[in-house]
Image 1 (cartoon, one colour):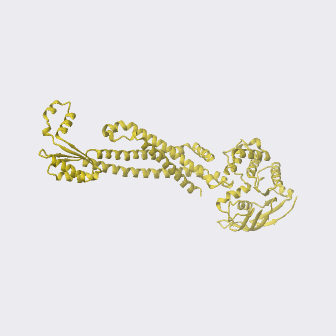
Image 2 (tube, rainbow over the protein chains, first blue to last red):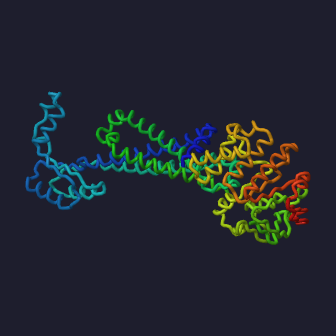
Image 3 (spheres, helix red, strand yellow):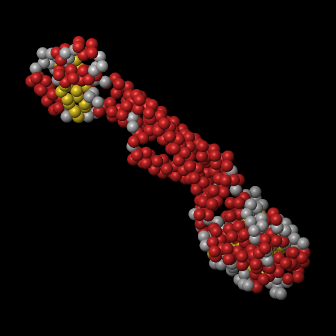
Amino acid sequence: MNKSLTTSWNHIRRSPYQSFAAIFIMMQTFFVITLFAFIVVGSARVIGYFESLPQVTAFFKDEAKQTDIDSLEAQIKATGKVSQITFVSKQEALARYQKQNKDDAILLDLVTADILPASLEISTNSIQDLSSVSQILKSSSSIDQVVYPKDIVNNLTIWTNALRKIGLAVIGVLVLDAIFLMVIIIGIKVSHKKQEIEIMRLLSATNWYIRWPFLLEGMIYSIVGALLGYAFATGALLSATPFLESFLGNAFLIPDQVNFLAILFAGELATAIILGCLASFLAVLRYLK
Amino acid sequence: MIKLEKVTKTFGTGAVAISDITLTIERGEFVFLIGPSGSGKTTFLRLLIRDMIPSEGSIFVNDIDVVKLPKNKVPHLRRKIGIVFQDLKMLMDRTIFENIVLPLEMSNTDKKTARERVDAILEQVGIIDQKNKFPIQLSGGELQRAAIARALIFSPDILLADEPTGNLDPTTSWEIVKILQDINKAGTTVVMATHNADIVNNLLKRTIALEKGKLVKDTKQKS
């Protein structure tokens, strides 16, 4: 194995431009894969964040009695679709209003607890439950208005689904590109060494003795490409995090997920080894019949 | 040791390289394989190392059925047969030491043993001082010795030499023949393809003559 590794290193060293091209395409591929992973996980977290917010807010009519409110609350809980339900009384609504507008004395003077409605803030287990819970609330005679960010979440889901599809397609194309380019590069190297390989065969070399350095070479390109792609993508994410946090808030905190980053790194490394091995094996099969 | 039975080799073009050859070479023999260019000498040697497969007939080397030998066993056969190629087939970007140690690396011989073995062989063929030079830095005779050294690295039972004196002056040619004789005396069967009538006539060894792929003469003269 040491000898094969030395031979692979010599192959790489002696044709630096080809090696650079192979590493570069691999780096591009893994850069996009890493970014895509960030987007997938990030968007899932953003959607999860919105889903975890009080998604449905039902405002009660002023004449609503406490028994109606309790009955409706019990009815909603009984659906089993609710993860959290909070009753906000008129006084609590005023307290929130005062907190939000503490710097504006005029606004504070104008509003009293009487003009603010009591409400129920409801989080559902999943985004699909929003609609049915909302229907129950709307059908209640004590409810004045139901508000829920259905459109935001729906749009977000459509966008992230589209993004996932586009991302997968781009990765697919890049992976194919990378494999083709690696097959060509390793193929050129095999062709270049045809005479040497022929001599080795005559001198009793086994097929694997000849194949190993080329397979290792492919793996080295992929691994180095994956390391660089991962490093650049992670670096880009880390530097963009303050900006992303400025409008996504706590919803977007991938860098604090060390486990996720470690698993992603290990996954990419394994993918790189498989990809490099596959590409060089295809080249070896093609050119070392 | 080496046994050919009704061996014929026809190429895809229809050209017949070897035609219906039957012969046996015993262990420890020194055999000259002679004939004009295109008579089938090189094909004969290539058939023995399974570099090509005969169209008809069977070949046995040390009781190994060369024709039916599975592909993955071919390297094992080639470790039992040393061969000096007509064009030497040295790797020009490697030193003499690296060229000769290569077959040992292929067989996973440990570094120390390999180094000692290469030094001993280079000493035997008389080019130990050249071991760190590249092939281009060596004379024709020295290169031929290096090729012989590489062929001997596994201490093979059989040594095949394809025109080892082809491009050498008479003195150097005789030096090479002397090396081959010494190897033969140590027990290795030597088959040497040559055009050099002077050497053949002087050594009085068994001579197999080929012409247009056919066996036209087979002597068993002893020195």
